[in-house]
Amino acid sequence: VKDIPPGISLEAPLDESSAKWIPDQGVSQCFKCKRSFDFFNRRHHCRSCGRIFCSACSSQKSRISRMQIDKLVRVCLRCYTYLQRLESDLDP
Image 1 (cartoon, helix red, strand yellow):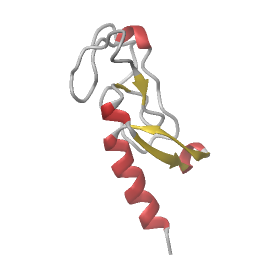
Image 2 (tube, helix red, strand yellow; image 1 turned 135 degrees about the horizontal axis):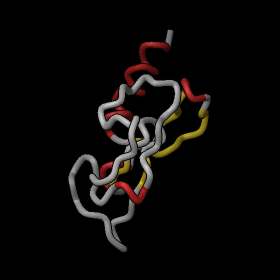
Image 3 (cartoon, helix red, strand yellow; image 1 turned 90 degrees about the vertical axis):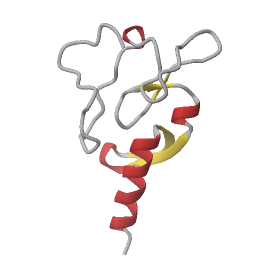
């Protein structure tokens, strides 16, 4: 990770109402597996936390109720686990 803008925490809580997206230019490798990005290994933002992951580490899809996102969107495994737990806690 290089040149992360001030005020953006890499350890931001998952329950924030909106994600603070990390700019593409500020990240050279996946936040989870640390694989470098290149022409074939592209960057993908987790729609929940805003961090950048490779395709393999952000292949899950979930709705994000706190952000009023009702369609399935790309999320990282950490956020997916959190969102699924939250959703199951809300089910009657």
